Image (cartoon, rainbow, N blue to C red; front, side, top):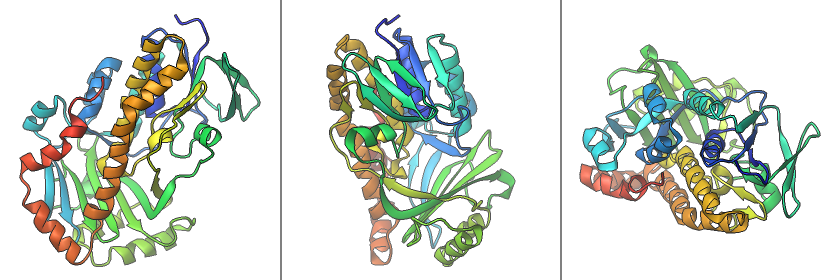
Length: 393
């Protein structure tokens, strides 16, 4: 067991919990500080590429994840107006052979519970609920974290795994708000019986149009249907009510394919999420504090890699800590060096896909459709090789 203090992880989400398990496996005492009253997750779906499974194998959770996941045979993109395929990623057995693991969709709550249960198997991991961190002090040979309820918690170093609006990042770098792009998202899960008929419900699908898209896929053994409706609006930074949200959606999707309008009618409109990311940048650490996941390199959802990059981060971070001995500055610098270009590419390619593939209009859409429909399965896979091959684990 390490003796110079605990590793303090701010944020009990996917990246933070993976980091806790990875560090505990290497002998660290770990304390995870979560601001919510209990460790849990907002109840919607999440997609995971094959690049996460080397990390899951090492954390000992792959079998549990696969038991709860659905394995689509394709990831489709459809034109929002004519409903015809624009492109697809085959995720069948040939895909799994190419990348060594499947593409899956899983209920976020199920994944979170798997990771919490894994943490509880390690006596060295403490899961602190109701521990909203307000800041930290670097004392040179240790760190002290302060919480909203007045506690002061001492550790060897601090990991900021506190997401898109990270307080740790705000203290280190001076910026807490992401760059919003004018889009918002509404999320819903309904019984699969309510899903529109006439297209493959067992697959992941995205319907893209000018300034809007819908993503959907099944969850929990094909019993639930997860829908995410995204669109551009001038009110992206404002709070509204259900009726105003509904009016915006109906206007935006008025000319869209009937299947999209059916899905819009199913949406729960109690909450919306403004969409944003961050500019790629260096400087993820300061003294004994280091950022991982969205706190360091938040990306748009285009590649479905927000969780994937955080999971990879947890493994690489732990390896750098183990290799450095007590030289945390060297460990943090090595971690950033190993992760910067890969995560920046995810950020930049996600932006490109967002604006140049998913949300085109007019003649640009005609050009997009012709170009992408000409691509073979091999062409599409080659575009993804950099992401799915040789993942850390």
